[in-house]
Each structure stands twice: as C-alpha cells, then as structure tokens.
Length: 305
Image (cartoon, rainbow, N blue to C red; front, side):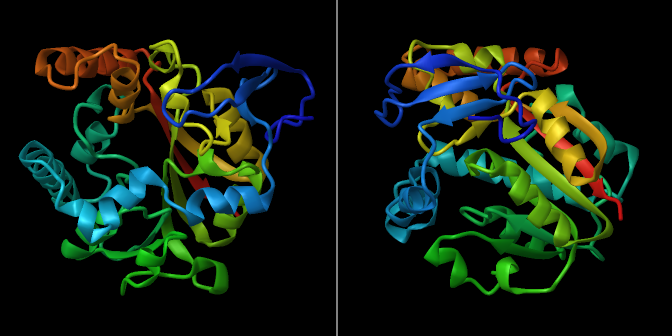
C-alpha cells in the first residue's frame, strides 16, 4: 500500500484499537514522508457509499425536521451568535484589513470558518459538502450568489442545490469545510474541484489537523471520527496535495473547531455541563492555534491555469 497523497510506501501503524465514537475497530497508518494518516482497512466504493446512504449523524441530526426540534435553548442562542458574527464579516468590504484579521490563526475564537477575505457579492460560491446547508442559506440571505452540493436527498430538494457532477458551470470560489478527509482518494477530489473553478478562482478547505495535541486527548481517539474520515491531514500532506494538483497556495492557517470539544467529551475528559471546563478547552485551542497546533487547518489556494 502507498500513501494516497505523496505515493510513499513508508507507512507505519500508529493506532490500532476500538474507537469509542463509532465503536469501530479500525486502524490508522501514518506516512513517514508527509505525515498523512490513512484509515485502515481501505473500503470499497460500495462500502463508502453505504456509510452515508444510511445515516451520517453529524448532518442528519441537523437537517431532519424531527431532529431540529431537539435543539436546546443554549444551542439556539449559540447558533444565533455564530450567524451574527458571520453576518458582520460578510458586511465588511472584500479584501479589507478587518476581514484578513478575522482569518488569522489566533482569531479562531470567532466562528468565521472557510470564507476567503476576497469573497464579494459578485462572486459565485459553491459550498461543496453543504451538509446542513446553513452556510448556503446565510450567504444567500446576505445577497451572495451561493450554491451547495451534497449527497443527501434533503439537499437535492433545495432550490440552491447545484449538481456539480453533471454541470459545466464554474465558480469564483469553492468552499469545502471538513469534506476532504472523507475522501479515500483526496487528490481525485481536488482535481475535480479545480476543474470547477474559474481561472484565478479560490479554493478554501478546512480539515482536521492529524498532528494536533487535541487529537490525542482521551484514550480512544474519538476525534478521528472513524470510519467516516478516510484520511487525516498534516500541514505537510495538505500542502503537497494541493500543489500536486496545480493550485497556487496562498496560506495555511490553524483554526480550531467545536469538534475538538466533542472529542474530549466523548472521552470523558471534559464535562458537557461544566461551562468553565469548556471555556478553558476553547482558550487552550486558541493558544494552540497561535502556535499552529490547533485541531484543524484552513487552506487558501488559487486555480492557476
């Protein structure tokens, strides 16, 4: 077996144990060259499809009407806070200094994820892997030409849905927020996304950081999210993957997400009902971001023809 990014055959097994999040007994091998993590065993396309044909909990819990009513008051208030912060970001002039500040490593306290500072209302943006589609709806609400794509039937029924796989349309910006790690062959996905960008178009990717200390919290590695995550990116492997496909790299920043909390909660290291513990976890994530060791990376790149 070889690394799906750098093609090195120097792989070593780094995790082999049950994963408490999904109760699977998968393993993770690490490429000694680019530090990409690879979930084992490798799955057939049919097996991959079956993971999402049934239920993918992180998305289904947010898009099924029966699930939306389960949202607590705190969750609703937090969602409103997130939406207000992103609305403020979208109201700023494109490429302004304030937008650039929002997307710095140490600003992960503010929930602006995977939106380039250059994005304007004249641009057409695709959210590839739109999931619960809240970002598409928020962008459209504020006058942006936003479309979304995902494999779930609920997404296909929305008026903003764009079947990118059967269309010649090209976009000014494609956003793939925590999508690439679900792909067993990430280079093929990046190649496909490049073909859907206009010349000079922007690609913005968010992926978990395989090398982050936050991934190592707890005895069972819940944050690796197996079997759904098929690859696990380091900064080196993310950069190699994008340059191999021909993107011009603008930057890679460390941007921790709420997922890091889930990992800790699943492994009983932080109490779900203890705001103080969760605050310190978030504060610690921000410190790690400033050190470029947070639980996720964001990559900004351009399609150079």
